[in-house]
Image (cartoon, rainbow, N blue to C red; front, side):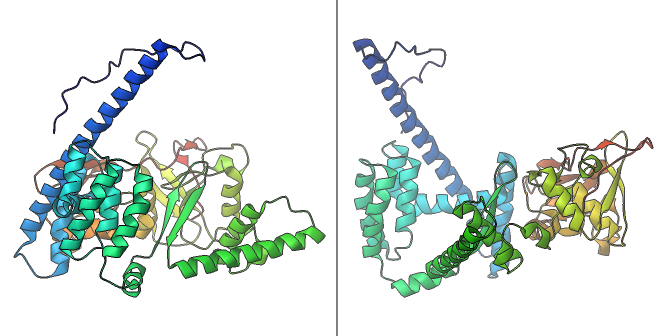
Amino acid sequence: MAFDAPLPNPGHRWQHSGTRCSPGSDARMSALVSDALMLQRQIACLQARQETVFAAVADVAEHRAEGVSARAQEHELIIRDVAAELGAALHVSDRVIQGRLADAAVLVHEFPRTHTALEDGRITMSHARVIVHAGSPIEDPGRREAFEATAVPVAEGTSAGRLRARVKRDADASRTDSLDDRHRKAREGRYVVVEDGDDGMSEIHACIPTLLAHGISDRLHAHARRIRRHHKTGPGDARTMSQITADVFCDLLLTTDPATAGDALSSIRAQVQITIPATVLTGQSGSGAELVGVGPIDPDTARTLAGIAPGWDRLFLHPATGMVTSVDRYRPSAGQRRILRVRDEHCRFPGCRYPAIRSDADHTIDAARGGPTAISNLGHFCRRHHTLKHHTRWSAENLPGGVIRWTSPLGTIYTDHPPRTVVFTPGGGDGMDETIPPF
């Protein structure tokens, strides 16, 4: 459905006429509400069309996979190949695109009433996601169709939040599988992810069975209450219960000892990459240290980590290009891997942010074909894109300066430049710059 109504005039400015309402202000408000409603319908229409295109791309991928092989791995590689082509063109992670393609196919093919309502602007994408999420587990096609026929009219007259509670009850009543079967299947999707925030803080999200989640919460709060009771009769502790609970969470995972709450940094043994300019270590500067791939960290944390590090790398850079030319270390280790980790920071497929320390250091030209084990022929690729490079029509080529040029199956060129890892400060007058990461 197309909307021919004109868009609001971007050059028009509404003026505030005071706190009193007037017929004129009511008219302006009415016009604004009409404009907002019109825009919402147009956006919904465009989103429905985008889902149509994504579903068509998913159909192309499935068509390519038909008859190629019965092996699930080869089928998956074909889907990845198509997702990578679209993701690189849209500057979106191919992992995200692959999920979007699957979601679009479900909406367009299995929930046609919902898709039509979205295209007509009668519901929003939020409503559509609620209906699809609730209705997808209904295995019987007839029951799913009946569920959708009831859910769409409800969605047209209420918010997505209220719709969620309503359709969940209807969907549960339409399902034929038992609660035990559902829980068993849901357990297979458990995961833990980290979402980085601002000011050196991050959030950890875990999707785990409800009983275990509440057990973990109870244990954390029990330890936190015990620490609070101890400090009521002992030294003062200005931390809130929330802060103590967060500290206990860190200490139980990193040290298994909640009694040392607030001192988890000294027990970190995970492999992370921190870059710390020498001026931060000496206290001459309060900025410049960073957790690679995430962002700046405060100088106190940086100095604490430097103090407990088993060894440091010193990086030397070319004075003109800023490229890493060498790495030395007070203790012997894999020098090339250290240089690559600093240079690459993350997987070098366009748009991918998977950490280099958990990726493969891959020969761009296979060693079996004479490719040298040299920095000029190496790059970090996560397992997903490492597999994509070797088993699909995607190809990669190393260029001077750590640049990697990818060629897609359609012949499109994508150039991935090494990220700027750290801001380097002038060294000791030898024409080179340096920084000292403790890991």
